[in-house]
Length: 576
Ligand code: DGT
Ligand code: CA
Ligand code: CA
Ligand code: ZN
Image (tube, rainbow, N blue to C red; front, side):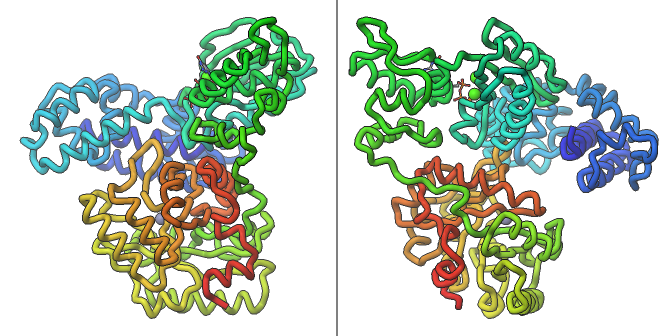
């Protein structure tokens, strides 16, 4: 178990304690421990097994909490957490996921009304009963209803990066079975969807299916085996319970199976209809003549598509949104590729809430082969991040000029992630912003304005002459909160008109903008940058998720500004 997950469980326990009205001092000790663990450089799960050092050496962790940590790592919960959950029921955890409700609000509600599920909470909001409680009103009821809908939509889904990490681990693990030649993820993971319901892994080679499945169900991360047949097994992994389906297939039908299990369902339905029109029949075993059952293609996906008189279609495009027609006419767009990205344009350092220095970020970026980066720390409105004020911005721009003159082996654009204030004004004065190469404007506060007001706010931000990019334009946090409500189309159109680019935020929790919005923006003439929003050198590797997102929106290298060489990118910026 990773430190982040341990910290999350401690915070959750603290929330439950707060709902229960437990002693404030004890609650604070849990929250402090969570913060200490989240920031701790070494895995707590490893530390628990060491004899030379102890978790109690970490400030804020005493004997009591050390025992709790042991329980959490061993079984994903603790006695105290279980006790509170038994008292409130699982609805308490569901309610904690609702935007606008904190432990105090939940306590008020549970004290007054019998709530056993989100359905009950929804009823209370609809019947306008929540507003009878202190400090709760119609606005909050509305917000709660929106959030319940959001939670329902995302229940049982996982971040792409999480599923991808497990897929990578299992791929290496299954490759150890003698005879296994290929382990390939299929399903939504292969299509690069921002969230994944379950993981579909296909295995092929000369290994006996039973040997593959035996090893699979013996993986130490398996929490529960859900089913086991001759060629297929399903199991749940880890405390979060992500389901993995593994299929062991003969080489001869691997391409057909990969095509079938990659989906999407909509794409496959259209492909099968095409097959039928051609007198063919397509299933997971192969493409056959409908009349004679004669096998036409099955070994590779390329062969299957070719036999259907189609160009091979990249998995990210397989959503039946017109890609089949384009493949038939050999007019598929050329999609952007990871190795075409030449710089990362959104990252934080210790100057605000990042974990590394400018030099460390630059070094890591150079290691990835980039020609340039923009350092974009927060501005002063985000006070808890120690955001930069005008004086620090001017100083920082000067420092970047010096570093570039000295030569770091990578060009540093002096940037800023400048807060867009409630009224649409930039957080810092224009004369300070004008010193910088690269100003990203982002909304981080007042996320729940009425759509018209939010639209005006964004449109006003676009008037800033220094603004180059709108950062994470909708502000969504996957599985957690929807984006701000505003007239996106109008903002995208105005951004295009003013030459302000839209950010494809590659952070796995954001992946903002979603493909439908990217397509809409492109149709309005907008252009894009892909950037990781890294707060640590290792986050720079998230670029690949941003590229996948761009590919899902059919974007090519010409749509993405940071595929340009340093010279061309500088020219595009209007900076010499
Ligand atoms: P997910 O897991 O919800 O993120 O989405 P997918 O696309 O991975 O869906 P999943 O795991 O149910 O199935 C993987 C692919 O297999 C799916 O995209 C299409 C194909 N597939 C599976 N079962 C069926 C089926 O009953 N009918 C059709 N047409 N396709 C299926
Ligand atoms: Ca799946
Ligand atoms: Ca599946
Ligand atoms: Zn931001």
